[in-house]
Amino acid sequence: MALALALGSPAWSETPPPLPEDSQQPPAPTAPAVEPAVLTMQEAEARALAGHHRLAASRHNAEAAAQRVGQSASALYPTVTATSSYSHTDVFGPDANSATVVTTPGAGSNVPVVVTGNSQRGGARKSLNAGLTARQTLLDFSRPHQLEQARQNEEVALAELDGIRQDVLLEVRKAWLTAFIDQTVLDIRRETVANREARLTQAQAFYKQGTKARIEVATAEADLAQARLAALQAETQLQVDWVALNVAMGRTSPSPYRLELEPEWDLVPELDGERILQTALARRPELRALQARLRGQLAALRALNAESLPTLSANATLQGSGAPTPLDGTWTVGASLNWSLFDGFLRQYRDGEARATARSLAEQFEQQRIAVYQEVATRLVQVRQAAEQIQAARTSLEAARESHRLASARYQVGVGSSLELSDAELALAQAQTDLASAANGLRTARAELSRAVGVENLAALPEPGDPVRLDPLPGHETERSDP
Image (cartoon, rainbow, N blue to C red; front, side, top):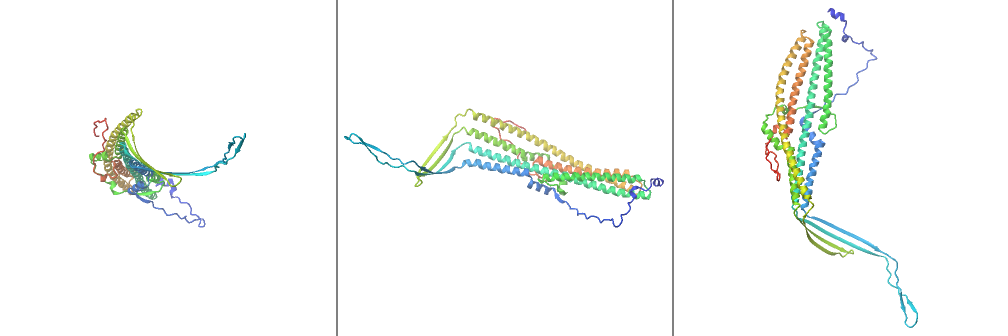
C-alpha cells in the first residue's frame, strides 16, 4: 500500500474535466456496417469457371480447332464456281471519203472523178459471258490423313482446355483457402484482443483494490496493444487475400466476403495410392494432349508419304456468250492426273523432319508420365502428413486450453501473475493457429492432389480406365517400362 501511495494516482484513473454544456456536441451518426456477402468454395469455383478469361480464351481455341476440322473436311466435297462478265465498247473516228481517178482514153488528160465512199462513224459493241464450273477430286491419298491430323489437333485443344479448367479450379481453391485461413487467424487475433481487454479490466480492479501493483496494469495495457496490432495486421492481410481471390475468379474487385467452408472439405478421404496413380495416368490432360499431338504428327507423316502418289481430279464447265442475247452455249468436261516424280529431295527432308518431331513428342510423353508419377506420389505423402499434423495440433490445443483455463482462474482469484496468463494466452492463440493451419494444409493438399490426378473431386474418384499410351512409331519401336 505504501508503494501505491508513493506512486500517486495512476494516469489511467485521471479523467478530464467535463466540457461545458454549450460546448458538448452530439455524436456524429455512423453508417451501419455492411455485412460482407457469404461465399462458399463451391460458389467461388462456379464464378471462376464462368468468368475466368484464360478459360474463355481456351474455349475459343478449341472452337477454332473444331472449325479447322471442317475446313479440312471441305476438301472432300466438290467445288462449284459461277463466273460472268459484261463489256460495253464504243467505237468512234472521223468520216472517211474515197476518191477514184479515171483516165479518159484519147483525150490526153486525166479526168478526176470523185466517188463518195462509206462514212465510218462511232458505234457500240456489247458482249455478255456467263459460265459455271464444277471441280471434284476423285483420288487423293493424302486427304484422309490431313483430316485425321485436323481431328487430332482438335483433341489437343480439348485436352488443353481440360487442363486449364483444372488449373483455374486449383488457383481459385488455393486463393479461397488462403483467405479462409487468414480469416480464421483474424478471428483468433480478435479473440485474443477480447481476452486481454478482460485481463486489463481485471488488472485495473485489482489495482484499485490494492491487491496488485501498477506494473500489472501497465503489462496488461502493453499486451492489449500488441494484440490489437496483431489483429490489425491480420485484417490487412485478409484484405489483400480478397483481392487475390477476386482475381482468381476473373474479377477486378476488392470485395470482402465471409467465407464458409463446406463440411466435406474437413473429411479425410481414404486414399488408395495404386488406384489414384492409375487414374492419373489415364486422365491427366497433359498426357492426353501429347498423345493427340503424336497422333496428329503421325497422320501428317502419312499424308506426306501419300503426296508421292498420283492425284486424279475431274472438272466440267458450262459457258455461254452473246451480244448480249441470245447466248451461244458451250460445255467442257475433262480430267487431270498429277504425279510428282521428282521435287529435288524436298519430300525426303520433310519426311525426316516429321519422323524426328514424332520421336521428340514420344520422349516428351514419357517424361510427362514420370512427372505425373512424381507429382501424384508427392501429393499423396503431403495429404497423409497433413492428416497426422491435425491430430498432433488437436492434442496441443487441448493442452493449451487447459493451461489457459488454469492460468485465468489463478489470476482471477489473485494468486496468478499477468506474465503467466499472458504466456497462456499466447500459447492458446498459437495452438489455435497451428490447428487451423494444419486443417487448411490438408485441404490445400487435397486440392493439389485432385489436380495431380486430373479430377475435380477426390471423393468421387472415377474408375481408372486404360492408361494413356502412345501409338507405335514407324521404324522406332522401343520397349518402355511403365512408371
